[in-house]
Length: 91
Length: 294
Image (cartoon, rainbow over all chains, first blue to last red; front, side):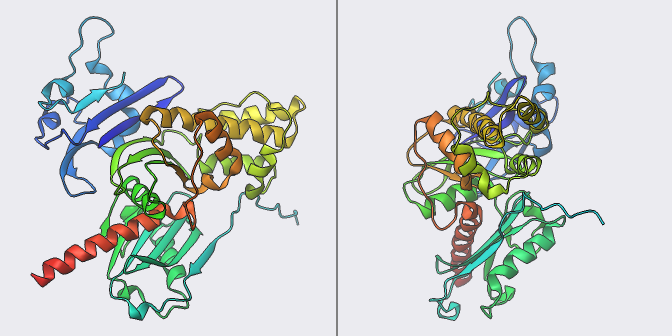
């Protein structure tokens, strides 16, 4: 399943996509994210999968901003830490 | 005393029961309770078949709304809450369903519910009271992709209630009225209900009539959700669930913009979440019984 957390508003579209078919629940993202946005919990089908904490889903644009330089190469801690490459940012 | 203003946004509450079934003849009695931000739905299933359902407005207390919804299903049947073997809670207020044995997200429940009501459904657009979700599912109703927008009330039932009240049009009349116009004003803001309301008033001042302003609002709402659904893509069949599915003015405009027709899901697209939850409850009960049998 591709779980898209985030929103689109007047300023743009901000989604973090978690591919639960790739996610193995290893928790590397939980420790890698400087904002502690990730959580690993059982999903609706009882498998342990990473999710973005519910209270943070409406603020991803701001919470992720410190990891996104306006110029130069960009390596996001969450995307890099995820060995199965299950995390993708849309912006 | 000031004259009481009619409440145009008030929609119809109702309950339904299959009179042809006696629940005592069935073994697996399960229920789904979907506490949305605007409406509360409950459905009872007997051996996987729909037995009764109810649709009420959500009050300020989620537990009370949950009790009211399930009571609506039980009334007149002689069944009590204890007779239901497994109850799944879902929706915005799912953590506040005191009698639920388990909670499942409304995303999974809407997919499951819509798919069980029409087996061909693969794309679901849930237009709820306070958010909007685009969901893709497989042939078993299992979620493959979802996208949600609950950042603002634009594109939601709550927004429609605001407009209904502003223009003094009963909420059920908005769809047909908005479809009967010869010209459509420019669409209002599609990202904010407060701005949309301001712009709607502006359109009235410019000389557009009520039906035309409703058309502008329905068009804005349709455009808003179409951008959402285009991110996940549309796989046939396409179904719209949630309260807005009853507004033809929005539904027709979504179909036109997407170029895909929405399929009917009987008995009521607003109940997809509750029926999906009752389906989950049926599987969970079967699992529980299998475990108990060793």
